[in-house]
Length: 393
Image 1: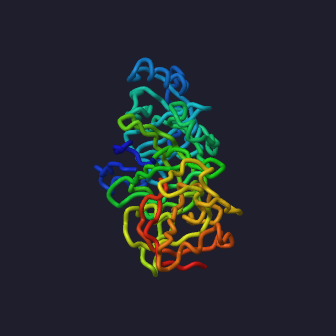
Image 2: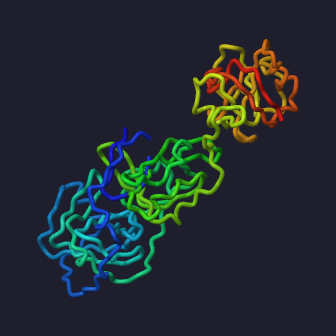
């Protein structure tokens, strides 16, 4: 089970412990102070973000007692309420969090000098921070110096990208989570993202999107589709979890057709489960499902589907075993057996359901079938047995 990840709000990856907030909502109003333009602060020794990260990794916590500065571009701010007393700065491919004593007037795109005297270089559960920072010690040098996000894949997620602005493409939230809001009213929201290959097969879940219940978009429902998302990547060492912080809802562009279909229906004749529902409700008896006929298995009773060669997706169905089953999916072009239900066609059913098999009637391919039976594993995959009643369109 995932544990809570960060004291600031943000994104990502299923069973998780929801944090309750210890802060009064009145303290979270966006009454930001005027941005600092104090150019009289001494510069002192100049560090790069890269040097600070090296110091943290090799020397541990460091309290700055002398005049010193670091420069960077603000990549995330507090304006949406998803961060509190925190911002992120980046210089090239190196980034760090600024965790401040109070709210600041920083905005994304601000070029800043951070006066370090009195602050502490440390980390929070694996995420590097400059802590105990007075917002008045962050001087804005210029505005609108925006940094473009790096587009990365799940396999690239690692320490090199902690605190950096990144984009994930071809991702979606899990179907079981999509009816939830980004965050409940009294806790952080935490939901996995799944990334897909171009051929539609899924990669592992990559990050957890973690969102503060104070975020301006907390009450919005998670997007239903597939697409891209931009934000800040962080890390929580206790659960060895990478998290994702959304900067603004406009950077969540997930309106394409999802690979994992959402669950619909109640399993009745008038309101059958879709195929995603049939998969989610395996081991329930006497349920109705509805989907597109996309193929048939080339295996006898007792067989196990282990590869694509065990399936006929069409257009021909000349295997003798094609009379024993049909495969249903939520879209007629589906070719991932793990998103399908394998339906057994018993020879002795009163309805004569075996007569719709694809060996004898290949014209039934891509027709819709509503069918009743027991949702249970068949041929090693999500399935339906004891089928009888059906409607074919």
